[in-house]
Length: 550
Image (cartoon, rainbow, N blue to C red; front, side):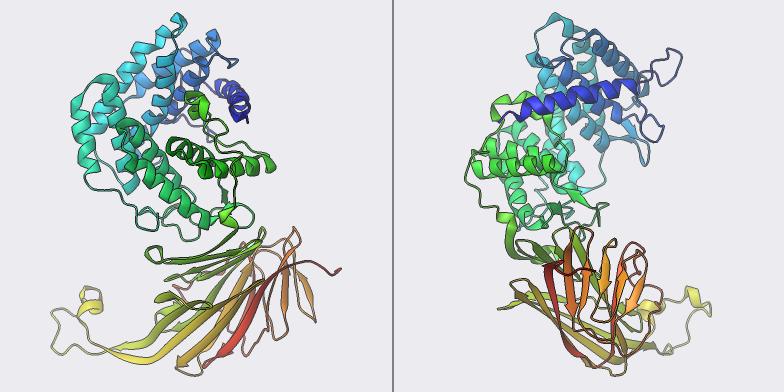
């Protein structure tokens, strides 16, 4: 395997487009910066670009090796950074964080990849940047150490950056500060999940910092944490190779993303731990990227460690992500996959069930409005012999008068939620049992308690194909919906994968929502099954392929 050469060619082409975006007008106050797609010059991004350019300039088989044009661009970028660095040493992330230590740490970690390649480059043509980048490392690291952070993953980026910078500058105060962060202990649970529970983004951010912490300390504890998370990630791959993100606690919630950024992480951790199985997973991601016409990022690591190129690519590989059945109690999710289909169950969320066949997906919510509880929200998610069980309790309630005259007659000044007594109304207890079948699941729903409550099960499909039963056929357009009276519903995606659900049922046409309910998606086509409580039904959800002509 020679993925390094392919990625370097891509990187060289990227540098060309990058230089075309650089501001070179000598009178421009943003001279040396780079336009973004939003016609904005982002201070923090200049550091990421600096690392990219230095990597190309110092790599002998790059077409940019010791290029005068690239040298001029590096000089200009350093000028921009010197002019836009805050007095404390930090840089801005202008959408939200100014003079930001954590964002500066992420930026400098990218610069450090370039610095390490610069250290290996002995050509005198590279000397022009050594002192300027050293001053950047020294000044930013002092600012990072003096400041703070916002979110859990920031701690590891800061600690990794400070430890690496201390090795370069000899500033021991950076080590002391890094250890203050590290003594808090890694926020990874026994399942391999980091606190922010973000398979689409922050898992790979954390894994990257674990690798950097290992390189700075030599402590394999950090590599083992990354390996534990990467093994957990096997259970987050859906049948089309995308990563399940609908239980994330961060901005990647609901994103359609693939595992491109994980390629270099599996490769690095596999190579450093001498685990060819992780290297084989990296090769699978590489092939998946090429199938989709993309290249994974991470060339700078292959430039630093060319000997790891292709590590584990020929190792026996069982594709552990193609079959799994695992409950993650701390993350409130169960994930099931059997080759071409997958199912996700989420505790405490209205979008409580996802089912995917190939690239075609569906999610389910249950609208069972009782007082201020608008949807089924599972209080429990437990395994059974045949699958899983989810239960939810809801009850109506009513305020009572205060037992004594309140201090004020201003309703909004009264502490009604905490101090006013209540009486509990009629209960609604709902149980979902999920039974695994070879080609899908059986979904058993049973309610107990209140009767005559209009309940609605909502199955929301990706649009672009069709929905039909024995008696009708309709193109599935985003934002549209239909109430099905009976029969089996077949939904087909643009690629020919089908999901069938049924038998359908309908007893009413209550489709309005009260405030606080999970919204009807304007990006999906929704099928309603409706009934009054008490309800006891079995709904078969199956994965298939289109086998009939329209």
